[in-house]
Length: 281
Image 1 (cartoon, rainbow, N blue to C red):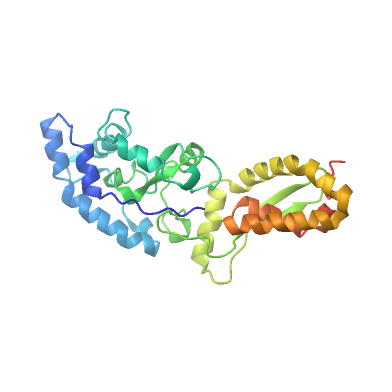
Image 2 (tube, rainbow, N blue to C red):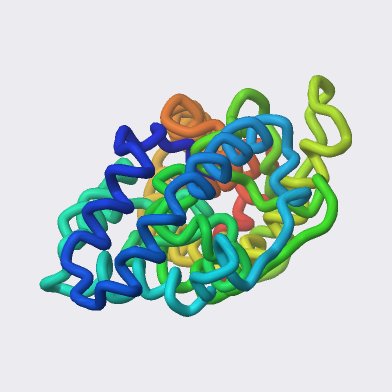
């Protein structure tokens, strides 16, 4: 998963921008009266997120007793997402904030939408709160939907508050069949507690990363098959091994837990692959 820098925007400032063009005086007044609740909610979120306690925040269907869930969600959908809405420039900025536009949830696909960590349908007070919103790909966004969890180990990895690249947790193994393929899996680092590892394991399962990484690694093996064959014919298994080692170390230097790093580490560790397992027949 990819860690992102916290957004710099203030929650009240964003809220004010989004509701700035509300024409209905009654709705505008009721939204304005939500600000104290919003400040409290942001403080609660900021305190609980690093402690993996966001699951303790209660779901709700209204704010301040007089703003409905639907009205608050529309502050996002109608007043931030819309192409002519007052908050659209903030939406565009956040959507473009992931390095290389790579989704932080799957660390693979391109970002093309925004994701609410606490879903706005169940936690409408957080509909336009910056620290609850981050760029993601549509596939991950659809998988997560309105996920509500009730324990710390079920909390998905939060791009703003979780660093999961401090230790190696993603590995792969070569499946010794023709054509060769890889199976991806998670391992628990010695320095991690059980909750942190369970969160990674559940995140990996929720977003179907084994299948996704397996598919992309299959393309990688196909793309490099001709080159591996040439190296084998020129310098045998040793030349292939040296190439795989260099590729693994290069990938690891960029991202410790990428599927590419896991792929080349597994290939480097496979004598079967280096000695001809790469051949399709």
